[in-house]
View 1 (cartoon, one colour):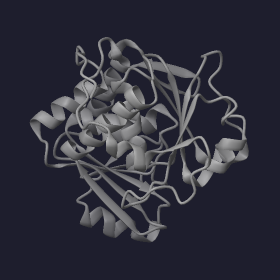
View 2: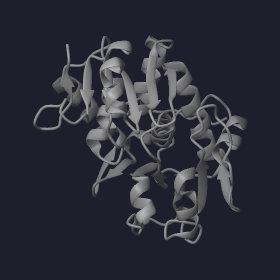
View 3: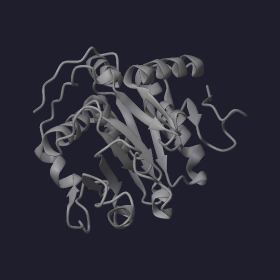
Length: 282
């Protein structure tokens, strides 16, 4: 178990305060309409997954502050966990669209030295054999994204099976000193520190007028700053809950809004304002 101090001004500080203030209320709810999956995580459960993943990164994969981590993952609750785990450990997360990985248009982090790679099982073969893979990445972690936490159906040689390995790691992790000041997120050719992400999250929550009473339904990728803010950080900063969708079935929208008590939406064509920003429903 890693135990290190932090000044608390970054995303890990937001999560720590959320767990202290409201540990049992849902923080992240996930839907995959193609698979018929629904997963709900309280702040405490989400934090447990973040801690285990951060310990895997630091103790299991020898990640050091500033290490780049490419996340070839779709919108998913585990993608949110990996983002937060990277930020807790002072690593630089670079989300990548699995479709772009499959098309071979995602390049390794430039001039950054060794990096780690986490990839969804759906693109794992392309990752291992492609430019991002074994010849370039120091470690590759494969995620089955199975609703029940099952292992990879096929784990290529040299790939770490996340579902199998993460459970062996400690469920407490305290962010390392200075993690908030390290480059935390690299998206669309821009890089943000942990402190800058928190500032952006609070500004977005104020702009969108969301608070602890809100349930925000999001159909956006984590490959943009707006996606990261709407899909994780603004709800976390404001006390709201977020519902992440994948393989969205438009026929299910009205019922989902009703059943999940949705008060705001982001990334839903025809439901957002002209700027594409988050829109309140109530």
